[in-house]
Structures are given as structure tokens and as C-alpha cells.
Amino acid sequence: MTNRGIVLVVDDDKDYVESTAAILESGGYEVLKAYSGREGTELAHSRKPGLILLDIMMEEKTTGYDVLRKIREHAELATVPVIIISSLYHEGPNFQLDPSAGVVPADLFLAKPIDPPHLLAETARLMGKPSTPASRKK
Image (cartoon, rainbow, N blue to C red; front, top):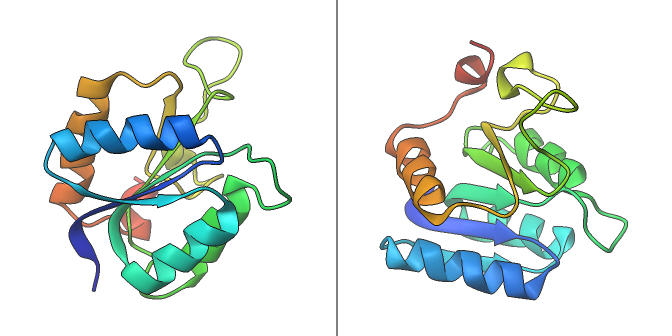
């Protein structure tokens, strides 16, 4: 069982984690902070958050894709919604990855810098209903 009011933020940029945590806390969420993929995976397994915000490029060998794969392989975490937030993603003609394509099992992709009201709206939306593998493939 996941903890619906808890959001896990995984990013190696400590300033980004702190600012994102402040945004989420202003929306009434409890925030877990992880500064590496390994730490994020461990926190996800031990605390079972209701939502995970995940960076892709980190300064270690573990990337966000590795973390996401490990999360999706764990039965208790397989349906936890995941938002990938990365400077690699932007909406436009050069690169846009649709989560429903099934290539990367995330629920949503957002570009950095993140718009705080948009982040809070998407957090509320994704935490309001459980994510399932079937809903990601629609």
C-alpha cells in the first residue's frame, strides 16, 4: 500500500530538490528527498510514496531510467505514478516523448524549469487516482 500524501523527489541537484520540496509542501504534501538514484530507490522501497518525481540525468552511474525500471519491477511500487522532470525533455518539434507510447513507463514528462502551479495540479491529478500499467498504455 502506498502513502498517498507522500511525494518522493529524486534529483542530484540539491537546490532543485529543495525548491521542488518547498512547492509541494506548500500544497500540503509530505516530501521525501533523495539526491541519488540509489537513495531514491531505497526510499521508494521503504516509504512507498504516493508519487515519485524523477530526474533522468544524474551525476552517478544510476540514471532515472534505471531507478524507474527498478521501481516498476517491484510489485508494491509498480502502480505508483511517476513524473519524469528533466531538462532533456521539452515540448516541441525536436523531442517529445508520449508516456502512453510505452517506451518509458512513466505517467508524465515535464520540462525543467517547472511551473509551480502546473506541478501542483499534476501532482493532485496523479495522486487522486492510482496509476496502473493499463492506464499508461491507453
